[in-house]
Image (cartoon, rainbow, N blue to C red; front, side, top):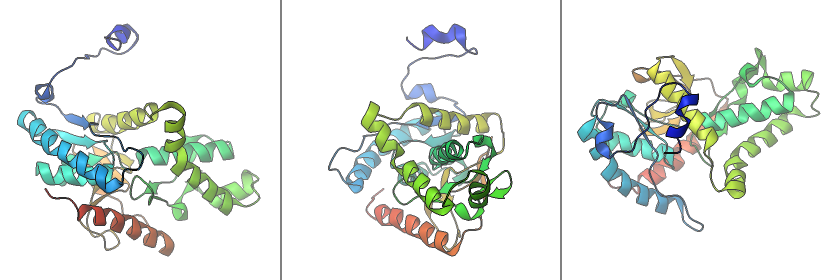
Length: 269
């Protein structure tokens, strides 16, 4: 009701409640349902609870919309993207997670604030798990075509760009905790991140976004869903980009993948 009362201020929209029948013939189904992690609860415990929920949700969605693109938002998003892919039997391009789209946006904001430059001029990604083992790809990040470290050193007047960039990444990783501490949950930024992904699908914008997708032969890593830059259009996830990673970044990426694989081993589908 609250949302419907605002419709005169926006583009023509229909907002309504429904059961799974509301998914009938949908182009995209965004899945946000799941339990939140409680204090003292391990990630493995949370995975087991949310996998049980997904075992009910995914078949119910497919009964009404077997051709939709499924966009997973529930955490741990990479694990549940993999679970959705296995439970649904859909082609790889039809299932994706929000991945590190929001993490990347957070990093761009913090760099832009630090360097006093429009975030649109910053090209850099956070990849891997949406969580503790994610990593920034500093080795090929740029601002206006210049390496980020070079730009920061020459134009942002930073005393030590390497240390400052490391500090920025730590702030990215702690962002969600700080927001949850202050207001109970993150909602606005993740909603806009999902809107960006959905818009790229509906309008076939062909955006390159670090969504969570099943990767194959990515620096020797297979059969796990991780956030990597990928082509997103009306067909869902197209090819993912095997961006050049430094030796250290490759090691971090493999660690991120192996961390998720250890959790996947505990899942029974």
